[in-house]
Amino acid sequence: MSYEVDVNILPLKGLLDPQGKTVHQGLNKIGLHQVQDVRVGKRIVMHIEAANANEAYAIAEDACKKVLVNPVMEAYTIEVGENA
Image (cartoon, rainbow, N blue to C red; front, top):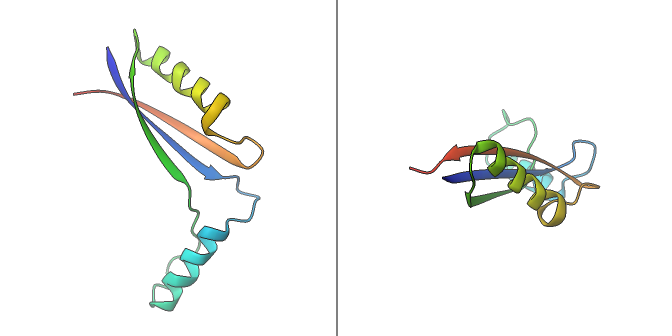
């Protein structure tokens, strides 16, 4: 079965996020003072062939641990859905 897996990667909460800070300042400059904080990360979409959703999740998690995420600076979440 084919699964679409979304991996969302963000800087760890305790770390400075210079991109997020720049975006936040820009939003304030255009009058969007309601925005309290901005964190900028990346979203990776993978299409994975696997026997079930748990296997697809495990494959995505392996990719995160080995290649996609720097655990010293980043945290990630994984969402698995079936391809239509």
